[in-house]
Amino acid sequence: MRMEHNYHVPVMLKECIEALAIKPAGVYVDVTFGGGGHSRAILDCLGKDGVLIAFDQDPDAQQNKIEDPRFIFVDQNFGYLKNNLRLLGYQKVDGILADLGVSSHQFNEPARGFSTRFEADLDMRMDKQRPLTAAVVLNTYAEDKLHKIFGIYGEVKNAKSLAKTVATSRMEKPILTLADFKKVIAAHIPKGKENKYMAQVFQALRIEVNAEIAVLEDFLTQTADVLNPGGRLVVMSYHSLEDRPVKNFLAKGKFRGEVEKDFFGNEQKPLQAINRKAIIADTDELAKNSRARSAKLRIGEKL
Image (cartoon, rainbow, N blue to C red; front, side, top):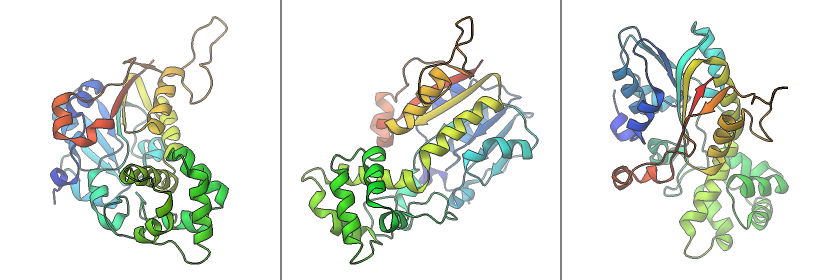
């Protein structure tokens, strides 16, 4: 069953494909397969000897698998990139594409609990096999840890008072659904900014549930090991918490601190940034796809 057209509209598709600089006989990896839009475009550029390996931990994405002898699907989180490539017999690849964040399909499926638009259980797992849900976070995490999550991952201004309210309220009744949560935090939601505030809080919970930042940093480190010299890393992010580690890794080869240099002053980093500034969607795409508004595309090349 093919459902990619309704599943997710690829953002900056043309820019992503151009950034990969695809060789017809190369080996490429799409680590966020989703609806398969980017993957199909990559396959269109490959010759008969080319290979595309796609990763996705979401079982819903498997419905979009591509029937093509050049296509290999891996039912795994991209944090396991290197091990899975080696299991398939690929030590090195020529390009890697990552379209970070949540797909339109995941936002539009009420049962997944990603969206503030639908009443649902507080889940937010991209991998349904993981035991940690948003409800578990809200009902078991210590108040100071909730404060940190809301403040750092959601950039919520009243993170401390929000965490205190959650920790106090759950003692009387567990917070299990969106309705439960909204009722508990109603007094903290700024008037006229309800949607933005809830989006920030949900972003914080989602990042914690899926360990998104830790997984991203682990993935980026692995790309340096598996890319061939001249191979491209193309990453599209949708908020500063994702974009920052990508930008730092391409610029410095690390996520914190300054770039390391050898005795002669040469920078020691595995990739170089192709574009100094992030690429953003053009006006035509912005008019057609609202999700493109926050997208930032960065390109790195293995030295």
